[in-house]
Length: 202
Image (cartoon, rainbow, N blue to C red; front, top):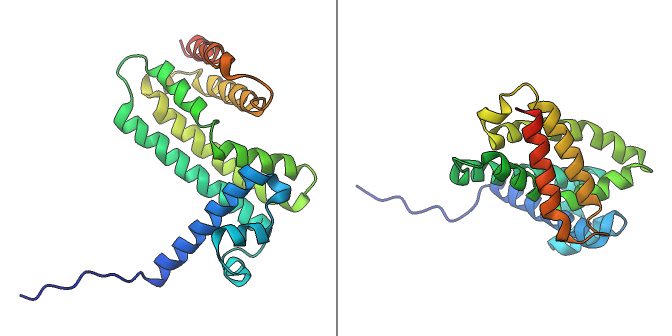
């Protein structure tokens, strides 16, 4: 019985997916380092090492590229959180652990890139129009992820949705102020969010 040689070449679909990922990763990195104004298509091309034609083949406009980059990063971050739920969720102290993990989602490039786009959308109608439906989808996805994160014992309580929205808003605001404040207050803020979640879901 002959043995088939291992496939070493990628399909067109695999090459296309790899190219898109290079472009999206380059966009996120540029947003975090240079802000929205500095994340031009030329900047992304240079970081990704691709031609303008290759970029336009995958993303017709700068706005499409920006929104897709945040969507890409959101999927990755949520997948990471769900992986943590499966592998590291504790039997005791689940609520405290979940609040800490949720806060961690506001510490990385996803929030930085998203914040850049939110601020830019105030004066960019095209970007705002593209972001609004995407943000609704992201919000729904995050809420679904949070239900798994906190577990049925907490997420099944009548006050969970309200408590989650309040904590998410508080964490979003705290993360936006991170440029101006020290991390010394993190423990105190986390304790207050845990208290809020517990009070509203008991």
